[in-house]
Amino acid sequence: MTRTRLLAIGLPLLIASNAWADLRTYDVDSQYRQEVFAALNSVLIADPNLASGASSYGRVQLLPSGQILVDAEPDTLVQIEAVLKAIKERPATAAPRVSLRYWVVLGSPPGTTMTATPDSTRPPSGLQEVLTELKQFHGELAFRVIGAAAVVTESGQQGEVEGNPLSVEQTAYVQGKTVNANIGMSLERVDPTNPIQGFFEGELEVRATLQRGEFVVLGESTLQGGGLDGTLFYIVYWPAE
Image 1 (cartoon, rainbow, N blue to C red):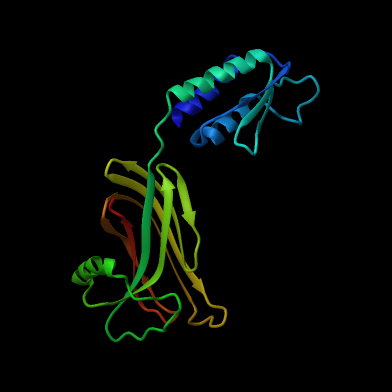
Image 2 (cartoon, rainbow, N blue to C red):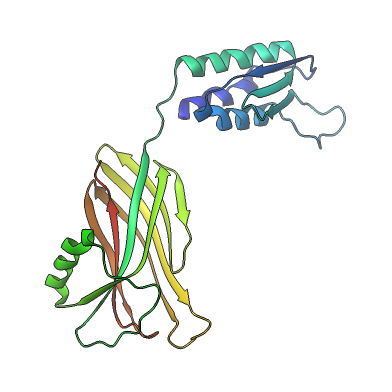
């Protein structure tokens, strides 16, 4: 995608006319379409608020068919066609997608009285190994999942999911079999029917490096009140291929 952006930005260096005289439509690959449209719209300076006589090189529109319609002077259209041809002949590799799964698990000491909530469930079998390791450091604990989420993004792009009680933001960069991720997890539940035992919260912001098929405990915090006492564990997983 970087190559596409640089080629399109190069257009203003060549455009030198403000006389519109021709209409052309262009077919652009779907993975580049929005970026090419945005770049053309920018460099053609299609601003309806321009004062009379101000410089403007043309107009561009994205049609329902997916084609890009350009109204510009013939010499400008020739330059646009040359750029689109270069993009087609040297396509950029699509960015890999990153799918990460998240859990917030509450671990409570034996004998702790915990109020049942609709948000809490037994941990899935896939978490048993990492929970067994947590017991080695924290002693015997009873676990329940307070929140779970999954976020899918393209490498380098930010994505988020908002839920009750768990919300997650991620920006993940893939490097072979490793992903470096900036992760934010926030946990909040408010039950208006039970303001005393219907509220809990937690928050975490970290940078982490993950390997495929690996569970990582990103952090932990103490939860007290709301009928839920214990330690919150924030866990992320990058599924194996």
